[in-house]
Structure formats: C-alpha cells, structure tokens
Length: 135
Image 1: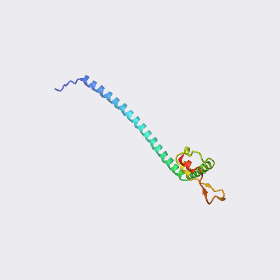
Image 2 (image 1 turned 180 degrees about the horizontal axis):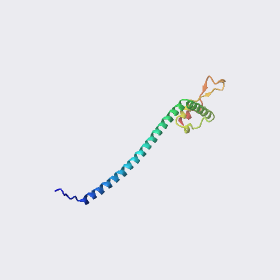
Image 3 (image 1 turned 60 degrees about the vertical axis):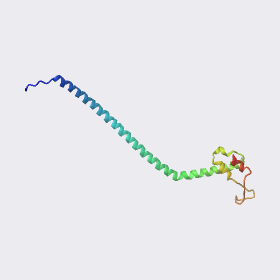
Image 4 (image 1 turned 180 degrees about the vertical axis):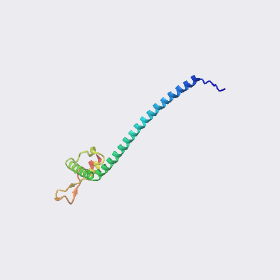
C-alpha cells in the first residue's frame, strides 16, 4: 500500500490554474490600490474646495456688512433722485418699463411749490400723477 501513485498531470494543471488566479489577484489588487489613490486625491481636492468655499462665504459676509451695504444704499438713493428728475421733466413717461415697483415709487412723487424757498412746506401733486399709476 505504501507505493501510491499520484497522477501528476492533474496536479500540474491545478497548479497552473492557481498561478493564473494569483496573477489575476495581483492585477486586481494593483487596480484597487490605484483607484484608492485616485479616490483619496479626489477627496483631498473636495476638502480643499470646501475650505475655499467657507473662506469665500466669510469674506462675502464681511464685505456685505460693511462698505457694500453703504454703497447699495447710496445707489438706491441716487436712483430715486434720478427717477424724480426724470418724472419732473417727462411726467407722461411710461415708468413701467423700469420694472414693477417703479410706477409705485413714481406715484409718491410730489412737486415742490414755487413759493417754497427752502424745500419745506406745501407741495403740489403733478397733474399726470394718476396717468403714471395706470401705466
């Protein structure tokens, strides 16, 4: 019984299959490492972008709280003065071309009386005030 014969050709084929499978596993391992590195790089870029966005939002908030608000307020006042001047010289102008809120603003405009020297006192409404509201 001791002299047992082993069919070597079956074991050689199995050994070749195992070697092929090991090579495939090595290639898969290498691809997984490459993809992991790529994913880590993308994650780092994402974190950096998120940090830049936070910094930008902070700077934007600081900008809007300071000079920007004052600038916006001044521009709004200048725009109202310009519309008033335009209304004084062209009362029949269709102000709705400037937006929905402008005719409402124009409806509040009043002309100063000629006998008023310092801009205080009585005011007269412009004759075409009602036409502007309907426009």
